Structure formats: structure tokens, C-alpha cells
Amino acid sequence: MLGIDLGSRHIKIVQMFNGKIGKSTIFDTIEFYRQHGMAGQKKLDIDFESLGFVPDQLTSTGYGKIAIAIEGAVQIPEIQAHAAGAAYQTGLKDFTLLDIGGQDTKIIMVRNGQVADFMTNDRCAASSGRYMENMASILGISLQELGLCSDEPVSLNSTCAIFGETEIISKIVEGYSTAQLAAGVNYTLYRRFAGQLKQLRSETLVLSGGGAFNTALMNIIAEQTGSQVLRADNYQFNGAIGCCVFEEFN
Image (cartoon, rainbow, N blue to C red; front, side, top):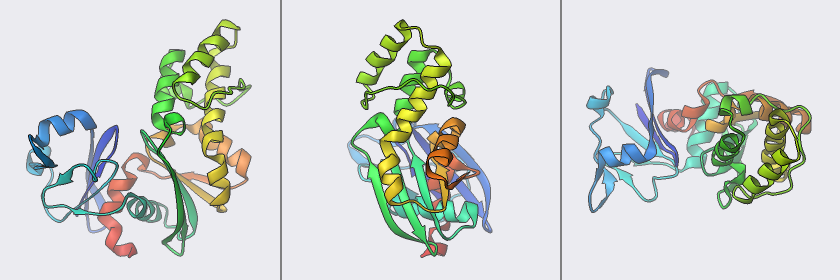
């Protein structure tokens, strides 16, 4: 089974054999479309063998599936794909999944292995991986460094990924340390989805998506919600894994 997640920032491909991941890889979205897109047609004709995959049954999901179809692929909704991926990876049947992608955040409540409810924030980049990328760039640190900061957070009022840059610069001028500002960014990120997370809260929360690397955010969520917070092992590939195991959970 081959699963592909067409993310806004990255394309993730996973191939599974007998319920286990055999091969996985990740590509920059724009470069992938440039290499495999067909001019004038809203579809991708992908030579999977050239990418090192054995072509067989193919399922796709993700941010880009609405605009671009993959030749020969069965398309499934993102919510179902991510829920199936998280259930498979954790072995849990009752949990809430927080998936932080490049341009949106999905909160999915799962009960008895099925999607019970969900909310998405896809209208503002301030709760997404793009916000973390922008703020880390302004602070002159890596995303990995950003993901370690939660102590003495600076209060940041702007909830906009664009105007937040101006506020960060003003705080730098005021003399706050990089670590304090990075912690403030992580708390601001949490506040952007805190209300939705409260509505769909479970005793166990699972993080996936590229933003799940952020250990500080993971700790903030645990502290603020009182829930057990887990990170899916293959968090960035969760949607593609869900494509592979989707039929088992439906």
C-alpha cells in the first residue's frame, strides 16, 4: 500500500508492507509539483519507481488534493486520514489529535477509533508551522531551538503571523532575551488553538504534523490542559500513514 500526503509545505510518501512501514520520503511541495506536474492539467503523473517505490494500490490526501489529483490514486479526506494514522501509530481508540501543518491546524476528536468531531483553523497562519518558521527566522534561531523554549515567556499580543513580526522586533529593542521571546512565540501559538482544543479535549492528546517537533509546545499543552500529551512516532508522515491504513479503520 502506498500513501501520499499533499501538504502545503511538503509532500510525504509512505509505503507499507504487511502493516509495517517499508519506506518513507519527503519532498518540498513546489519542487515536487514542478517535477511531476503536467502543464495544463490538474493532475500529477508520478513515476514512483524512479523515486524508489514499488507501485501498487495508491491513496492520497492532503492540502493539495482538491486542486491537484494524482493519476491512479484514490482520494480520501484529510481528517479521516490523519485520525487513522494517529490511531494506527498509538494503538489508541479514544483521543484528540492536534495536527499542526504548514498552513493550518486540525483538531480531531476520536472515539472508538472513529472521528467523532473536528475543527480546523485554515484561515490564519498564526496557528501553523509557517508562523513558527517566520518567528524563528526573525529571532535568528533554528526551529529546533525554538522548540526548546518555554520558560519566562514574553507576553505577545498580536495574533497575526505578519504583524507578529513587528511586535517581536519591538520586544527585541526592549531588551528581552531570545529565549524569552521564543517562549512567548510558543505560548502565543498555543493560545491560537486553545479554545478549540478545550472543546474537543480528551484525557489523551496526540500531536502530529511538522509542528509536532516542538517539545516546548508539547509541554505547554500538557501543563495548560492537564491531559497526557503524546507525539506520534512518525509525526510528519501521519497523513500518509493514514492513507495506507485507512481501510482498516472504516
